[in-house]
Image (cartoon, rainbow, N blue to C red; front, side, top):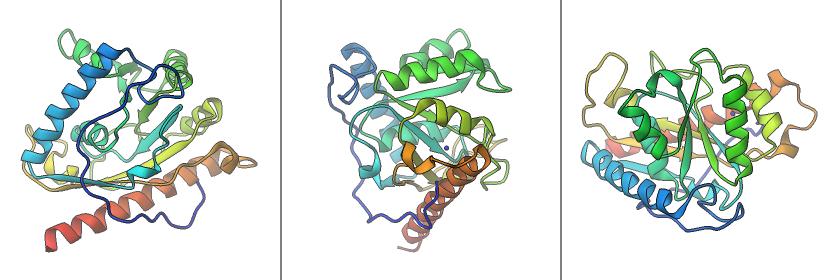
Length: 244
């Protein structure tokens, strides 16, 4: 959730789930225990297998994700599948911002176990901001969908204004991502997903010094542009897959 005219990356092979252990904030997986990291990897393997079975997925631009340290990962939001697909495409474990209504008796403990934490539906609030900053400062990746909700039509909606404040407070790299294909696989109103190919593209990081001198509206516009550029690359890759 910058200002470069284009985001380009060479296609890369599909990522197999995996990761590296770490003991401090400069190591991948530093923000969780060894047991939690092992559990996360197991769930990610299951989800990677499932999403491959319902149509297949590919991720490009993965080298744009910093290998260590706190990172904000920001993406467009089309479907419930998006969370799982972003996790499949990144070697490091992710933390997820999720609305508080999802933390039900069974679902809540499950999504907490893979790094989710609650925010209020109407906005992040003080507690959500505090937890986000805590996990970033511990060296983790926090995933956000700055549109605030799933797209009703498959296009990117305006971003919530609060993203600029969060980015300023965090002071960490912001990696934009674009997803294509999940809207057709599992849009709003459909009970279960259907098989569809999916593409993800991760763009170059936006570093704190890239935002110096920009007001909040310019920061928000920059993040929106970067996500849009990633979406376009993902769509082009998806079109190529469908034509092959």
